[in-house]
Amino acid sequence: MPIMTRRHFLTFSAIAGGATATGGLLLSPPSLAKTNPLLIPPLIDARQQIGPIELTAQAGETHFYPNTPSFTAGYNGHFLGPTIRVHKGDDVELSIKNTLNEATSIHWHGLLIPAELDGGPHQLIAPRETWQPVLPIRQKAASLWYHSHVHGRTAAQVYAGLAGMMIVTDEEEQALDLPSDYGVNDLPLILQDRHFINNEMQLSNNMMDIMHGRRGETFLVNGTLQPYAEIPRGWVRLRLLNGANARSFALSFSDKRSFYWIASEGGLLEQPVALTQLSLIPGERAEILVDFSDGALVSLVTQDDTSMPMMGMFNRAKNLVLSGSSLVTFQPTESSAPFKLPIKLTSLPTVMPDIAVRERSFHMNMGMNGFGINGQSFSMKRINEQVKLGSSEIWHLSGDMMGHPFHIHGVHFRVIARGGKKPLVRDQGLKDTVWVNEPVSVLVNFDFPAKQAPFMYHCHILEHEDNGMMGQFKVV
Image (cartoon, rainbow, N blue to C red; front, side, top):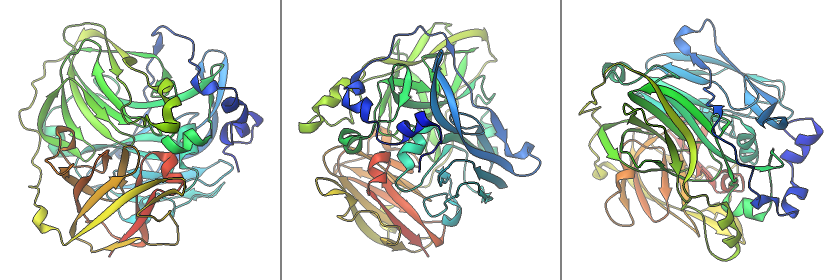
């Protein structure tokens, strides 16, 4: 069944026959000036709530372009959802209501909780039903996100807008006095790409979309088309989330300025890392600090999507590779309070591969025989692996034909080797999603149980996941 009942969205959520047959996939939208203020998702702080945090998955209508509605979905709104802030040590009550015409779920991507609370395909919320989990927050400060995770429908529902950001805070992070005024000098940036025809968002569904994932020619940040943001004239914290179905972003600033990478998916790095470019794969998050005290107008831009396969049947995809495209323009305004960049951010456990009790290999398959991992397409009824609670293992990851973002639910891991050599700079820190464009080995810690329900591991190109590039494991 479609997400929405309206006739236009029936076309959106099913096979977009007219859109794909006309070659509309390669059309570019009209050029717009940077005149759209960046939308900042509303903030829900769990400690300021009376009763549970209420989220409603609902159909909507969004005007990405003036005078042209697109049929979308969101949480508590028409597209995307609020930012939820939670605090280490708290137990957070939520109430998630589904007003869509099909089942949905809500996965807390990056949150370390028991599997029955994870919000994967085993925790479905039927139409007109409500799920009321209580989430124990026991991890360090980090930027996470939440999104639909229905097997076979994840790609369509996330594309429609069922996603949002979650922020975990703790006393250690607060003591660093990092920029933390939400929406002012602490900005969430949800990066996505979408396909438009005649200014209306489309969901195409052809072989190209399935094989390399849906990639659009138009960028959105927090659901805003070609946005600008007024920011303080000083240091600003950007919480970056790649919320795209399949596209990777190679991020830098238009004036080539340096910035400091301070956190990966699992939280703070040990010390700030000075960079001029940072890549984000689908599902990956990063926090950076940028000094805007010079007052110059500057844009966050992305270079070529190097994850795009360029062989054989995929050659047409070159038309969707956008180099040097602006994502959001920053306009510094009034000066802000002085800020001193910390030398040290946190301490992370020493990486000790020798503690691993077992090694396993996972190869992501794709081709004429379909999608899978280790030659098996996903089945809700099959438990692929069973691991011991409190143990550590080394997982060796590889894949066919193109790079794959590999995500493991319910864990943090550390990258210990890439291509048989030392990890790259981008591999450091606590992670839950890793870029597998060559053989990669990770040390995984299994500290949260999966007895009543399993955790997932899968490619985070959502079309690959939906078509079988996923497995599941129990932790007992």
